[in-house]
Image (cartoon, rainbow, N blue to C red; front, side, top):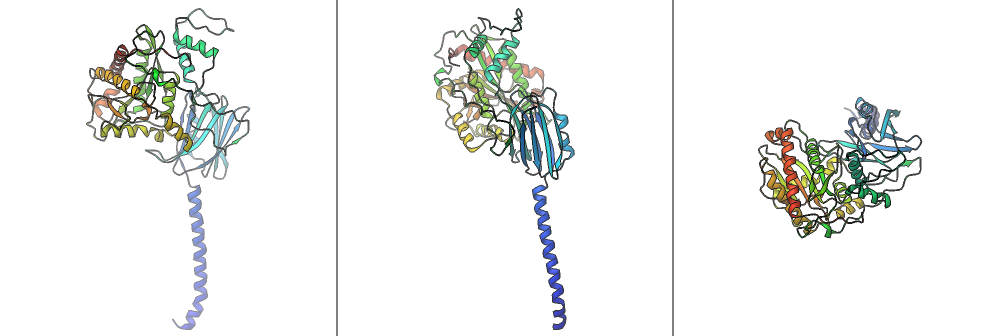
Length: 484
């Protein structure tokens, strides 16, 4: 090309370069918009429970949201930014159950370009918590809406209400009168104390609303702090040998729940479903039994399919001043040949085996899978609450676990013949003997099939009940503190 031709081509090349740069800038701009506004909803789930109702909106990218609470009638409006209304999100309307304690219904629509609004019509005012969770396990990004009652559910009140509901019917009381507890009913005595002196409540909401949330009505005061637990000296021990003349409370803790399915069997059996069934069967046995003439009562940390954070499980058991804490699980391992039941207690000095350490780490990750709204300061407080274990509690836990293993071996194979120990967060109540029972390996096809049968669940509940009775025969519980 000659110099003249090159001179004539230069303006043309310059224009082409400018056009390319302009196009490139536009391409970069479009790419940035796609990153910011390209999220799609892939699944929606609703978990109603008396404690709280959870709504989960899962997307393939993180989304932003804003929420507004309106007081009369009570409603919650949530704007999700960066998305368009799609069939997955429309399914949310049909997932609201008539028996949901908090949601009466909802509407969802395209409020503005790339903004979807969800309006919840509420049955009662709520304290909403809206937060995001990063991808974990099988989940992508999750936007979580937890609807808590203004007055947190008190575990002791729930236990009393259940006892009064199950009590034999007597002469009807006048409609205007409060039902009077029987003098021979220990839980009735607790109810009388409840009326005379309000009990401190255990908050089940992990954190308050973030400051950025717009509230159209005065916000209710935050739930009170965790009720102080009885001193560690009240831990059941072999030195106690007199009758207590009170109700004996056993806290049953069905593992996982809600967003956290737990382990999955090769045929799709979910751990959270099996352990809840076993807990219900064991509850029935406990509620019809007694210890040296003292009636027993079971308290479930969850009685339906919803998620309960690990520290809340411990708080609930302490709130009802449980005499024992039994967490029920179904084991899983990468090798499908692993089989047998196990019982675990807490350890203050490391795990008793690498397998026990691995299992404790896996179970302690339940909060990540289930989804917990937690700030740095809350995490510090919760870790402190779960780090007050005592030597006496661990010793009594080992006795309880040994008694249970002795009975479980009569109904199935044991994976380990002795109680193992590791740092399970859910076993860290300092004043309650606590064990974690792995009922069988749900990852083993034969044991998965066995766990699904009524016969094995009944046999297992019988074995656990006999273990509890054996423990109390050798370690009668202490008299309960009157300061509830």
